[in-house]
Image (cartoon, rainbow, N blue to C red):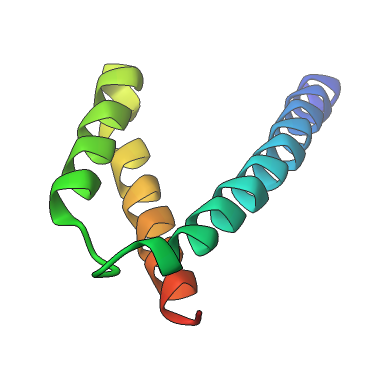
Amino acid sequence: MEARLDKARKKIDALDRAMARLLDRRFALAAGLAPLKKKIRDTRREARVLANIARLARPAFRRAARAAYAEIIRQSRLLQGRR
């Protein structure tokens, strides 16, 4: 049982490393868009992103995925506001 738990945790750790690298890239791109935008917030774009994430996620995880991405979008806006 303990070995199975350790193996699963190692997989989660590997996913966390990959996600951290991807988030870093996403945040850098989002921050770089700030000078190109008239307004920081684009609610239509945000709604499209969240709908796409919900579509891509498994039904059991849609709510969690949408909530996680809503926070990613919020943090991206904060970074864009710090131009």
